[in-house]
Image 1 (cartoon, rainbow, N blue to C red):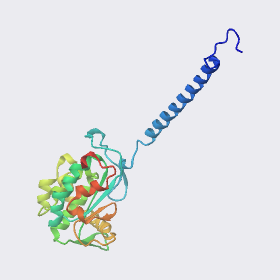
Image 2 (cartoon, one colour):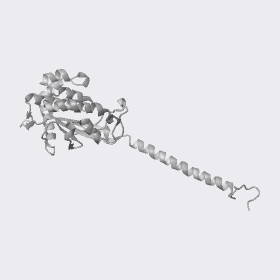
Image 3 (spheres, rainbow, N blue to C red):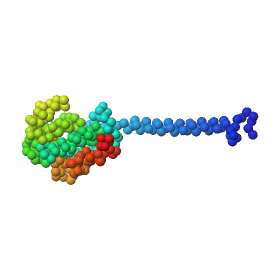
Image 4 (cartoon, one colour):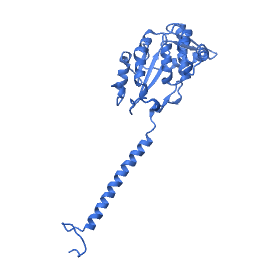
Length: 261
């Protein structure tokens, strides 16, 4: 029997014991919630960096990617990153059509998602042979003007480094008849490009070396390139990307960003 001053519940359980059990249960609940919140915050802290923060440079070096946080339009969502490689040549009609009808619309649609690794390799069906002095003799499918325009593209890519800033310049150069026209119409001081600097690079042994490096990348393709432009997504050639690059990129983005809707 409980003492005269010991309060009990209707079931005869002392209220002090019930209060103690309630406090222990509440404490366990709060500890559990606190643990979940701590783990979540720790995960967010550790996962702030992502594979989209860096990219491979044109010559194989690792470079930081410009942040898209400053101009995020709300289309950026976490997810995988798709690598796009376009093997192209400056005066190829098929390349010119692809650049203007597929590549640039895809870039304008998806560049701000930060989930496409854009890579352009201007070489095509060219050929470069190294000389004894370390320079290169190069021939291109559409003649000498195409070689020097390919070299100009490679100089621009090396100088600017990031697709977010060189894509429109490459589009402008594509299909131009000669170096003078490309320099006059496409090289903008706002891109930190000097016309004299780009003219010298494109016409020099350094420009030919850059073209030869692009040729080495092209020669390493397996299966071998048989058509220009040769379009690869995540290391695999996708023929349909020639006709619908935005759609094929969106198919491989998981989850698809809002821009793909």
